[in-house]
Image (tube, rainbow, N blue to C red; front, side, top):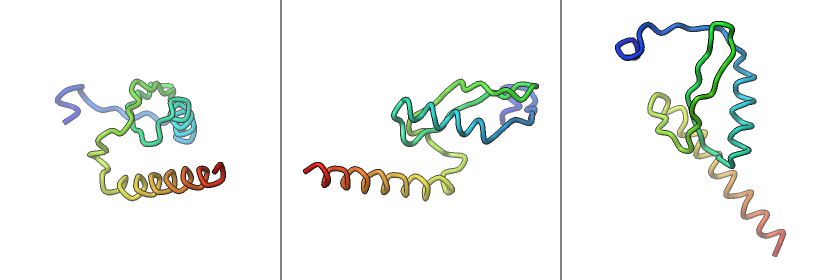
Length: 88
């Protein structure tokens, strides 16, 4: 599918841990708890975040993402209620 639109897909090695760290920090700054996005990796392995979506479709990984999303929502709910109890 991608090749029909964008030509041949090329994969370059990159630092996945660094990408996760930068994406998580961006989401934190934007106060987005569930997110996805698009990244371009250049031939040097440098990444460029071109899109950060709050609540994307997760269509390619919906089954894998569903449990993690549910757990995150549950933990945010518990955290918020715990904090509310401490302040009242």
